[in-house]
Image (cartoon, rainbow, N blue to C red; front, side, top):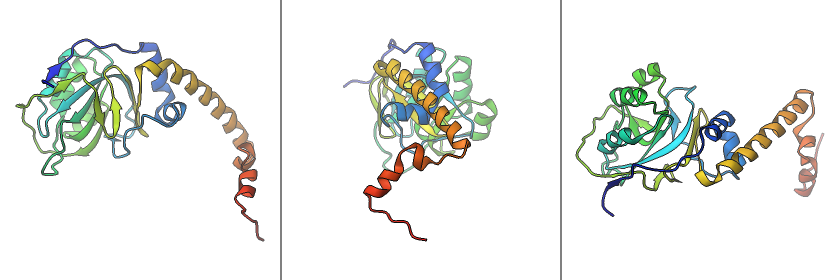
Length: 229
């Protein structure tokens, strides 16, 4: 397949994206049957980073960020860049594919964040800017801008398939992907789960045990677990 940039994609509604962001990664992950979670090595570069938006997917050659620059042009405000590699680095090098200057461009165009299965640099500056980034590594190793790639085609990022326009939710727990076609169902399930958790939290605060709330005493019996004083 020839390298290409797809300019036009479908996106979920801003209202649905906002709700998913408010629900957070853990609740969204549970609401969609524990699916869509990126690998746990994808960590925020500062503890309170959080974002939700439509995925602009990018495939880059190892150590080359040309296609990230190309993707910035076609983003709408609220989009999130999701970057994967065309292949693994043959040297094992964690390249610093994104830094303060690219973040400055992203902020100016209203881009909501970055998820990148590679390294980033200029962490102090990105943190000061409060530009949300989830990355595999931190590295000052510079990159080239010479290699063709893809923008807005399906990718695998940190073990999870991401389609252009899928919803990306990131916070201190990591990153989860919601398929665009499933957004309304996940929102409904997520809101129901949050309400249920609120009721459970109230009971736990009153002193009730999880063993009783979740009916786990029967499970202990089934497993043949005995009490001994």
